[in-house]
Length: 324
Ligand code: ACO
Image (cartoon, rainbow, N blue to C red):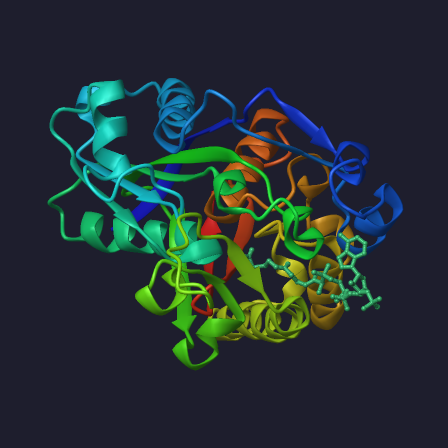
């Protein structure tokens, strides 16, 4: 038995923050941000929350799949920006969509979260105990940014994406193979601190607002090494050439990272769709947001072979090979 994607959805807040807007807030420029990252603008949540956006994306995915909330028996949300430690985001979404039979939980694996969440859903569904799942990535990272730190605040944005997964007997379609890793030894190069050591500042006061801190160059080096390695492992294990894959749907962190991965795999950049110019880095939400755009525009077609790859905090990285 395999699990396959039968619906996609996304939700982006209306509020747009352009590079020019940012250049009025910190010492930066549209030119610097575009050339170093490929980002032109991002969406910033005002009224929207992690669970309201997740619910919006979920409703769209359910509509596309023509499945009612009541039929869903598993909801997994990948997020690093949940409103509550408990109830978890998945349970809040459950209530919004009437998925009263679903088991609900969140996973926290930063920008690799959606890949891990799909992998967990696949494993649970293959037991036969769960038949229809919603896997959601939703982030309000704007709440975790130091808006005076130009090296980080220009990179991120808010949004949510979702897929409906279903058990499938259909020939060859579905999640074929996966490979996912963590390296806690390098964890401190990308953090959003809530630990006690971080909470006390040098003058002994309690820090209330924990923000994303990053060694950008270390993250860059890690991503351009580990993502192609992970993809190549999947290709080799499944006797595929890089050309056999129709699309590589990567976490949308930085255009230069994606270009470097394409180059290392000797694959045309045309096979690496991007939308980070419009949304920035939406962490666990970036892959399902892009999946839905490609599906809505009929760029992705039934039978396509795709690889989804995520990478980020942990450090963590991983890829899924899927026949749509
Ligand atoms: N505007 C203008 N200047 C800036 C900005 C900015 N927003 N940010 C940094 N600078 C300056 C620095 O101060 C530095 O100035 P100096 O030379 O006078 O000291 C100069 O630009 C170069 O800074 P670097 O950090 O060396 O710039 P780099 O070329 O490495 O680009 C970047 C920085 C874009 C962050 C890059 O390292 C990168 O893309 N790293 C990967 C980060 C990433 O994608 N993280 C998220 C992935 S994981 C996840 O999604 C959670």
